[in-house]
Image (cartoon, rainbow, N blue to C red; front, side, top):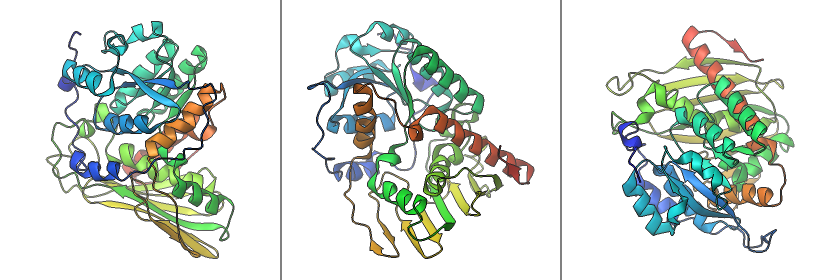
Length: 375
């Protein structure tokens, strides 16, 4: 395989929640429900991972537990990774591609779907190339780095007749299914106030990490973490925000945060009168969700990360199983594609587009110092 490595373009990810931290989380996951029946005998959806960074390893673990999906291919620019993954996951040589040979995947009937796990700025190119190759696509969040990119991705998949999903794993997680129910069904009356924040202390991050590069990440923690805060406020309320006011936080690590923001705080205003206040940051750890309604409250802490989540409401503690979030997401998507059914709107490209429009408005408001109205 010819070497066309992303390493010269993308340094090793250093998110401050490295492999040592993630290992106990992954090992603590329990199997998801065993009650699924395969819709087509023992047929599974064959998936190729495009990009073999940190999160691809977590997805591979999820695929190993999936009832409906199978890891059957990889796309990488690093030959040493190709060798390691081939041996570890028993991937056929013919299902291994690099970024030059990627388009040949269209001839491979043993790949049904490409999961794009690349830096944010590369999402558009490889989603479109996968669609043109006739493969369904899951793209990690944020869907892209600009609204126009999202629209091009959606159009490419529509033109190719393939399905496009965004990696919104929390829609398949039981604690989040519950807070969505509590909010949208007004179990405690109308929700008046939401606080949702996510951040990690990245003081030890490699200065060459792609998350610090504007042209690759599209932004700082707002792009990579803040999208979860925006998502949860939207699906708990079941509404789209009318306006946003935002403020950049102080820069405490100027040697690192030269191109992207270190922190940002914002307030989303919704048609019902509800307000969601959020902060996303790279200078401290935070992972919380809290909703106050007319007659009660509900909250998660941890809330938006990989978990394991803990939650409670005015009626007491939540008692939901700890699941493998990636396996649940992949099974939810894989089952429907195997049954030739349309994927739900809440994980669609249109959903990803809505989030990007809000993120762009947050950046605009923080930059100009004024409220920005969303249309």
